[in-house]
Length: 536
Image 1: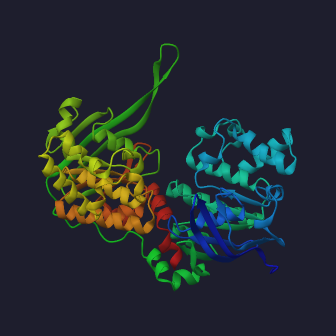
Image 2: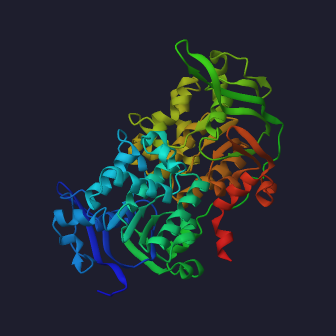
């Protein structure tokens, strides 16, 4: 084993055995992680990145999983052949891991203090006040504001970014030699992402640890990694230094990944008459206290928003999570109560009852962030897409069937698959089903609430191109809510930047992207478009 290398993976293979069926998910993977360096494993979902990383710590569901070949050398020992007791000493102590979703790895019933103290107790033998003192140091190190106040907090009382920081503090408690970060920022806002990355970079330099970063976001990798391994279908197809890989990618798949950034300009539709007008829209949630539940204050989720959206145009609404974007969308569609004026196709919506709004629902459709959550698992695709037609009693059965087939062809799905169920499709295909469901009613307005955030970049690009071509073809009007600025830039004619329920900047999208005026917009753009700044 080379002295510089901390870990050497050679010819690693992983199989999952289900009954008689053997599925090989990783094949012949070899790489080294040097001391103090950052190695990135990049690839789309299902390429075997996480399985490879979990193999290092032996966190796979054994005996269902097995390693038919390969070794993982760490300080002269093969991790795959160690006894469970020995690996336990290494896991969390010498090699630590941060998972993608902090809520699954933090105990919801224990305070932050208790959870970090536990790690320190197991591996370092620290207990009581000594452990709490060390926990405070760790929370301070990962940048949690006023850590003394946060010790007693439960995980759900922290924001997504803070939870991720607590996870990092737990992982660093024992000063590991290697930190495995599995998609550590996917669920976070761009500005928080940037902070978490900077933090990992700084901690790495300070503690001299190696970092194995698993990600599908190349912008992020470019920012932090020294070397990159690109994975496709369980194999490493390319390995190179970060600089080299971005400058001259060798493998066609790497080139495809690099080209997958959503690009192009918004649809060039003729600007029509105003379809949707909103005046001084407010959604305030009361804060009630005391025995008589008196309203003492309000949470101002949406506070005085105005805009006019012409037909055939897209309004992009951006901001961090919790800024009130989705609440605004739901208020416009009259799915939650609000005050202020909403005009749709010249009709005043705010004074209509739910019953009176119902026929207009045909004209206003929604595509949600998580297609799996919004598609019923008990209905086949044909039933899902045709549900609106049946509700609004549009056409005969044979006409409905035709409309369903046409909608599926429109979004690039094979109509022959219409009798299958949502779980039999990939994430990108499920999102296409959700778009087909909205399309089939021939609406005038579609609200797209983070429709691409859960997808790989290559699939994202396809969905963006699909939305653009549908807009051109049917002169659709979109309300596009997202925190992914690259996607917003590729689709939006107008832009509205929302912070804490208020608009900080709005106007022509191209102009704002070229010269943002408000510091918050500048911050968002800086955090999102990582590539131009670092490519020079």
